[in-house]
Length: 121
Image (cartoon, rainbow, N blue to C red; front, side, top):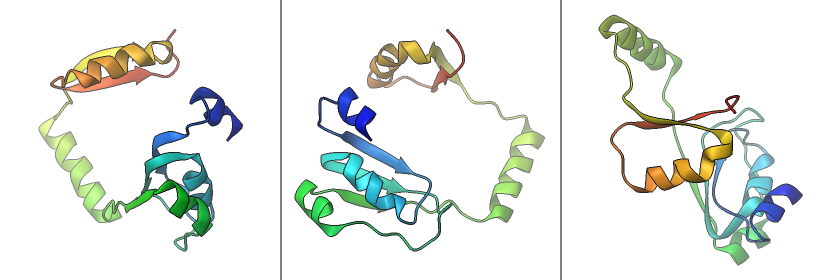
């Protein structure tokens, strides 16, 4: 948590994607900036989420629940992609060190995906 506050000049982040759930929601709320958003998409730690109320209220954090569908639907989707040989349109690739440039590119509203290669220098 300390690293996030160091990177953001003690502001916190605007968007948190929480794939853990459970008590981790409280950590996500603490990491969020004032007016930030927490997107709860996973439940690796369980479906009962918990967070202290005070940081949630003082920061005016919005929590969004994101449903991902069923395993069967995902399997059907993957089969359809395989059968049609569907491939994403990639607008550009960046290394993790080039993340600021990638985000600037994203702000231009490109057609296609912006890819961050996590192990590319």
